[in-house]
Image (cartoon, rainbow, N blue to C red; front, side, top):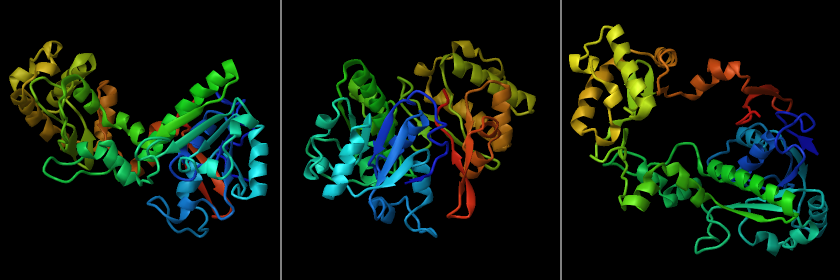
Length: 383
């Protein structure tokens, strides 16, 4: 047995502290067990003798001094305990079944029917209250259920790529693979609900997670526009569409002195307050702001009916101001003024973020096999 904890299982407390989870995931659902561990569950990572299949393929893995491991593998299995078990053999299956008798949850991302083919289809007969969480590209049934898929294929078939990129360019995939995270978070949420049901009834369930379906939430308001108006949202590059009945679009990404900022002309109480504060900030800095914008009553500003002409006029004033600021100056300014906006962080910015440091977000973990101590992202929530 070996462990790679951010917090040792004995120290973990939280929502799921009484529960034990068996983790058979390899790549697509690996983050699900990490979330459950962060919530306090005792997660036991069960690994094939030759290591996870995904370690030798895919966009996540790079060669390390210890090729059976990688930084991706370490962080996705942090907080878990680990054993090596070949459940494709009769002895391994018997050992897995013995573990199931003491477990509350088993999570896996094997192809649909794979457990049946291994002779492991009767897990609920061993433990009636077991929650079986199955994370696959397209779910347990349907025309694509047996098809494998990479992150690129999942992002494309979910529709996410149709919304990403410039209108005249090709559809784009987010650089770091996202589909496994969305599927794992849905898997963790479904697991918690199924545990609640099992606690009340003693009845276990199978949580069927489709990574493709999980990505619908990543598409923002586009599905709602189709459901309600039969309007198909198109990708618009650095602009946001769908906020108005006039068809006006607003810029989202702005260049600044040392990178990029995220700011959108919003409506509603928060947006009106932000717009007013931004104009006052520009005046304080001596920017050339037209009189009508200085005196504009933002309380009457309605984003739903704003015209493209008005948006363009406001943005023409905002853009030059943003170029005078660094990301840090912008960040400090929006905090001081209680504004709704964000700098676009690089990995280096995130590592040096004083807010994350003050919250104790980073967990240092010693790795004797690497001869180093690595800082891990902490739990996604603290209860």
